Image (cartoon, rainbow over all chains, first blue to last red; front, top):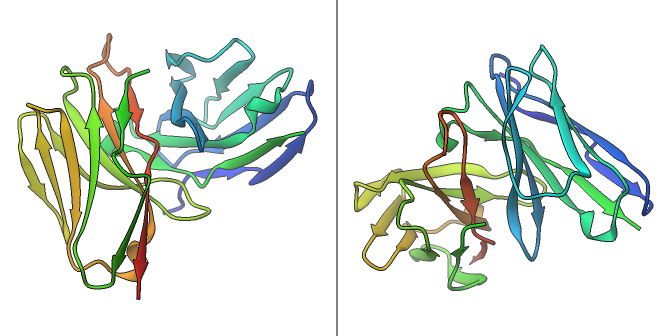
Amino acid sequence: KAGVTQTPRYLIKTRGQQVTLSCSPISGHRSVSWYQQTPGQGLQFLFEYFSETQRNKGNFPGRFSGRQFSNSRSEMNVSTLELGDSALYLCASSLAGEGASGYTFGSGTRLTVV
Amino acid sequence: GESVGLHLPTLSVQEGDNSIINCAYSNSASDYFIWYKQESGKGPQFIIDIRSNMDKRQGQRVTVLLNKTVKHLSLQIAATQPGDSAVYFCAENVPPSRRGANNLFFGTGTRLTVIP
């Protein structure tokens, strides 16, 4: 079966711009979680969506937002980009958010802010 | 966030030797722990998990040990192979405030290098 697909794989943006990242979960998976990965902080939880509703949110500023569509695909948006937003953004899907052992991660989108 | 840390950021082992990767966690309420492997250019891949009511769990060539007294977790890889070279993360799950919510906190990772 196809895995979790994240697009694009790489992005370079300028400070102040906004960016939208996409995540297509495994077919049948309804939960999508987003993480930010940086060398210094490791993986930090951004938010989780289930059935088009944000079910949980991490400690990130309001510049980080997301949504989920009826086909379970999810997007996250970062507005007014800052240099510190440079990171690998990972999404993980699961059937129903039943627990992290049910997670399958995508390969991530590498965002560089210059 | 929760404090989940690793004792060593890098670990080099000879092929065929056993590897031990350590992890400390801080929340005594954490009920579930997971080890992930992340290879270059890929997302984290689930290796093995353990619930807080267990002390040890074995998989194929991997064993996870949990010491709740000192809040310590370790991953043992037997007969380490070049394909095991990757970054390994531990993660702890804090019981969610509501059903279905996820509170998974990751450590920063240990890079394992296997020397042929």
